[in-house]
Every structure is written in C-alpha cells, then in structure tokens.
Image (cartoon, rainbow, N blue to C red; front, side, top):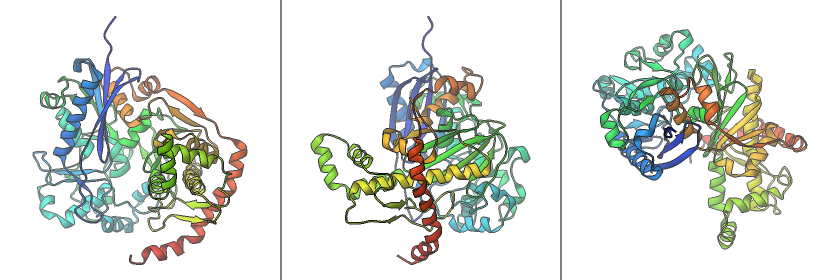
Length: 514
C-alpha cells in the first residue's frame, strides 16, 4: 500500500493566517494559525507589512507540520487565498515601496466618486451603482495623486495574493479570480479596459499591471528552496494559482456550478453564485467572466454587518445572560438562541434593520444605519436578539431576490463560517429564503478551497469541479418550513418598506457632523 498523500491550503485573512492540511479526499488532518497587526495611521486608512505577513505564515505552517505529524515530503500540492484588493506597490526589483493598502481602506472614497462620475459602461459590474473605494482603480488613482514619488518608482502593482504566490514559487502572476471582480479585467473582451482607465486619468497604469493572468488552480511553479526553508516544508511542492478568500470558499463548498449559492458568514455575509450567461442587474455585483470557473460568470451580493451586530449586542447588552451562562458553564449564544426560539416569528412586533454600517447590496447605500421599530416595555433581550437574526435573514433574502430579478434562480445555499454553529440561525435563513441550507463537514471553506486548488495544480485532479466533488462533503441539510416562510413574508415586506420609507430621513441624520 502506498503512503497517504496530502495537500496544503493557506488562508490569509485580515488579522490572521490559517494553514490547513487535508487528504486528497478532503479529510482535515490539522489546522494552525498565527496573527499579524493592522495599522490605522489615519481615519479610514488600513495598512499591513509584508514581513509581518511572512513571519506569521512561516509560524503557522511550521506549527501545522509539527501538529499533524505528517512528513513535508508527503505534501503533494499547495495553494493560497487572501483578502481581495489588499494592494501592493512594488519597485522594479519586486520589493514593496510602502505598506500594503488593505481591502478595508477607504482613503480613496473621493477617487471612487470620480470614477463613478464617468458613467462608463464598465460600471455594469457595480450593479450600475457606486464604485467602491476598495477597488483597484480607486486605490491606484489615490496613490498616483497623493504619493507621486511612490508612483514613479512603481514597477508592479499587485494583490497580496500575487505577492504571496511570488514568495512561494518565485513567479509574479495574477489570478483571474481577483482581476475580474475588483480590477475590471474582462478576458472575453480583450482584457484590460484601456478607455475606462483613461477616462479618469490612469491611461499610464497598464504597464504596471499584471500581464500573466492565470485561472485558479493553474500550476504556477515549484516551492523554492528559500521559501521551503522558511516554511519548514519540502522544496519543489507544486504551487497552484489561488484566489480571493470568499471566492476560494466557493470551491471549498463545492459551489462550482450554476444554481448553488455560497454564503460565507462571519463579521459580514457574502453571497456568491455562478451563471452560464453574462448578467447584470441593479443592486447586484457582477457578473464577472471566468472568475472562478472558465466559461461561467460570477455574481455577488453582500451584507456589511451581520455577525458584527450579533457580537455588538452580546458584548453591550447581555450582562445578565452572560452571568447565567458562566454559572451554567454554557455559551451566551446557546442561551440567546434558546430564548429566541421560544418567541413567535416577528419577535412580538419588533422589527430591525441590519444596516449598522450601511447597506452593501442591493441598495449600495453607505449612509443608512441600523434601526429597531416596535420596542415596548414587554420586550426582553431575547426579543432584540431574535429581531437582529431575522433582519439579517431578510437582508439575505433581499439579495436572493436581486439574483432572481437578474435571471438566476438559486436552488440552495451552501454555508460556511460562524453562522453554521447556530441551528436557529440556519433554520431562519432557510425559512425566510425558502431555500435548503447545506452544511459542510469542513466549515473552514477557504482553507479547504485552497487545498483543492493545490490538488488540481499537482495533477491529483483534472479540474476544480472534479476536485471539489471528491473533496467536499456535505454533512447536513436544513429544509425550509413552508408555513413559517409565509409568516416571515409579512415582516420581510415590512423590512423592505422600512428602508424605502425612511432612507431620506436617515441620510439627513447620518450627514449631520458627529
């Protein structure tokens, strides 16, 4: 009998990196992580340093090898995922000229407005709405306008993903998975939209942009001797082209064919699906050609605040429940879920809006905020918690409806992240959206997704779809309750009306200096 073979996935998030080791059938062997700091030198700015990234990656990978007991020589392939639109400006020797500008950095809001004002046809990818300050053109325009000395020395503009792949394999490539959604790269229509860039003053940017743009899972090169020594791995491991964390999470959920929706949960929700045909609709991001699977189009929706609201509520308003949980040796969330489930749909007349940090989709409205209507002296923390969960589910359904309006009919939601831990939350999503919820065995979908890309790169599987089919296991299925769905419908309609009726009023308050 031959020895067991493994694949490695590295998942780089905003504050930490996670390394995961898997068999070629997707069984997790071990995970390890390490953290790095985030720097916010000014309001709206967010930066990180590449040497601190690399130190953390090396720490996590070495810890993983020790923890797993697996010989590095048994690792057949590897790949990575990172945050998207975390950008680096490199000199001609491929060395960083300044700290990385993080995805969440919004210093380029003025530049984003300038780009939006062009009204260019490329804005179809933004749901015909506002260009985000997180996207490549806005950040690059900011650097050109505000740091001309950096701009002049810049030989290469790349993603965090591209930098990491270069550190591993010595090749400077880019992934279609990040270029299409956030860099406006349009492969079917010739690649870089030169006229679009020129319309807002970036006519000279293309010479600095990646030229070698690969599909996810494509073979990039072998792990170098230097990288292997740093990481505690064996040199020569095939390195596969990676992607953005959420999009790689689709691979780790086996959402690699039309109809399925990946819902990546955590601080926020991200909703992702694939379509056979190009489609653009107001309030929906995309569709992006070839971004995950060549020949298919990626659509995207997102809620800015979901898990963050739940955590805010738990931290600030659940003192008594926390004391009870400590006394019983249980989780605060267990008690909140139990109490909320005893209440009726609609939380006894309490309705919430989940726009604590604005609305990402379908309204693309950064100037609205969270709201509760119907508070009475009879309401308890459990009512408030239930109203929050219901509002998040209504926000998800609003995005599903946008997908339907655009021409894509979801047939199921595949979920990963924190919400998986709450049966109440997953059931409520199923009931409100009238869709089954599929729960995977491995909830660290981006990490598994990266490992799957590594399996493709080393030739263990012919393509992403075959690899995902063999490496992703669905452990549970939550069916919608049709009767509850009808009950939720009344409150869902009121949720939508609340935004439409009060947005002008909210804008007026938000605009007032604080």
